[in-house]
Image 1 (cartoon, one colour):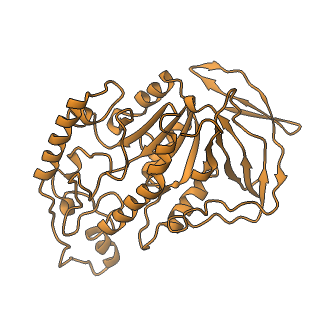
Image 2 (image 1 turned 90 degrees about the vertical axis):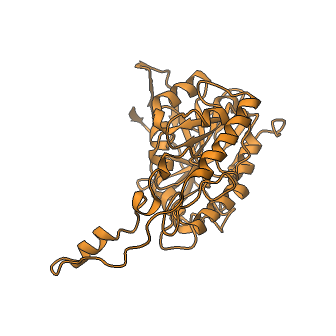
Image 3 (image 1 turned 180 degrees about the horizontal axis):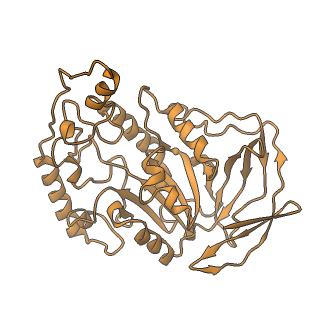
Length: 351
């Protein structure tokens, strides 16, 4: 992508499939905002609000014809010395809502954090419970509000498109019947229940060298070991379902990470999708770097990170508030950020 600045006019030249697309002039005008509404302050139990002295408004970047979905968004620029906000108008039919890694950990599916010291998802049962509550209170209502209006509601999960989960969920290549779903769910419950969720306890004795005891200490007892020692063999090979905190619809589509990004890209493009509203976990890891993470998607689509519909991992803290604030604030250097209350179906398009 090349950027040309001509007397304050920004011309964006995008490339798709090796061919240069039509360009339009963009007036990069920044107007100072006075007493603007708070950013990301709707769910203070999960997200520490964004506080920045300088906030500006710029013209919309996305202005679709016959738009029916309003998405106000912002980014941060050190060069502009502040936050830049812009209204955007999208066509819902050309938009996908993707939830990254809604793992069904410690819920009624039966995939459990290994004991006594195993780690998965947000790494402890207590932290996993906070994420599940966030899904119920914030993400699931957001998905319900947009389902039926957007092109797709989608979830990414680790692993391959295995024979069990492709019976339970719609995938890129097939949509299971109601009978197949019931059979698949029974088998998924059986496989998850049959696994032994036990690993080794913490080591009672370590061997520390006299010269570098700190190095030896962390080598033998790291802060995060999700391998076979504490999680037990086979834990990560189990077919991970979508969290019970999500109201999955038969029309929703599951993305299997092991298939890689190109099949996801091609599926979205074949559905006419140009925009992605990204939700899910964990803001500092999977949300950015896995198959459906924004580092991949932002190469081919107009991506909007729905910040309060995401949580970062939060080691050393009992709340994710500051961790997700920091992760989103950094992402805002090169991504557009929105929030649940800023995504609105136009009048007449409300469910």
